Image (cartoon, rainbow, N blue to C red):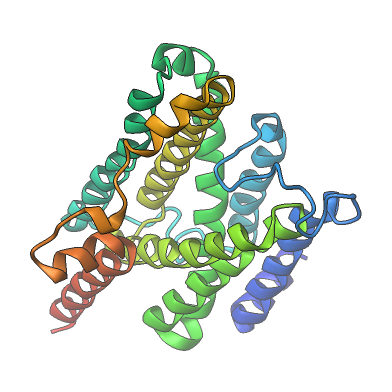
Length: 293
């Protein structure tokens, strides 16, 4: 049975990965598809909110991806156990620094609205929080930058596979609309996830491993959720004291208020994932060509 599955996945890799993706799409959307809040009906659901009570479900998703990869014999080709190319370590390091900078708006809001950061930090169950983020990273990177990237790579090459897997990664976030999130924020999330997927995929190619993407993906989700908790605390304070809301809105400058003399720098800051992802992909391309010469 296992041998038959491996042969089928090897001979029809695109069909295999698309069926697997469809299964996960159903698994993720089915629990709430018939609820009253489905298809954008739950206005309380936000892209920045993560429910830690779903930890067992995330554990199932992460372990199932690892199990599937092992079952079909793709562990090395899907970059789960491949030897990393440490010459590209600068890429995840720079991405980590960028992710750290995302904390700045949240901290500025906290400063301007009177949020007690000690209370916010104390309210987070850090063990569960870190494990949850890592499991999300394992599932999403394992599925998209592991299974899907390899499945398409066999037929259309690494660059084409990177583009297709990035589009599919972004599109997968329509699950959030099906399970209640309103359509506008979901579309923004789909577009942003697609560009992030491009960057994570480029790093997977450059590092020849998905695990650097797992770590930075977990860090990114953690920072976004942490910012969301700061904003929620600021909103609670503002609801009690409307004067605080006016102060908080003046703390974070808009893009029109930031004067950048170099228009190229503006593009880099506004589209970091695509710009840096392209740089990482170009570095991978050059290194591959040198190794083939």
